[in-house]
Image (cartoon, rainbow, N blue to C red; front, side):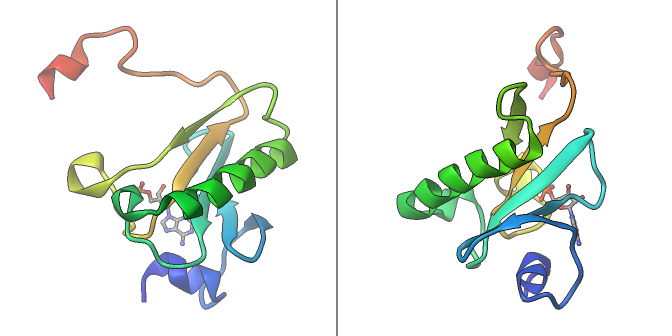
Length: 117
Ligand code: AMP
């Protein structure tokens, strides 16, 4: 069983932010912004490439609710999903990183470093 499935089953602890029958939001263990929450479907889906539109529909409204609950729905936030090896996905259970709580930098916006990838 994957680590996020164990979090869903409370077999390992997490700092929960919100949940409903199908989705869970909890704080990232190693936050990269003042707010760094992971949002997952409770059912195991490996990655974004495998997710169905119907799960994404539920995940969208759940994520909007999480953003409101965290008070960043108006100030703004960033959603990221890393997909697969080249995308840097380390946990193979679909998750969206919700980052916020301050003005976020966008490393590739002002430099040429993306050309070196
Ligand atoms: P990714 O690289 O997109 O797969 O992101 C995986 C994320 O999961 C990283 O930001 C980790 O800090 C986070 N993470 C790993 N284990 C845990 C855990 N037990 N509780 C909360 N966050 C975790």
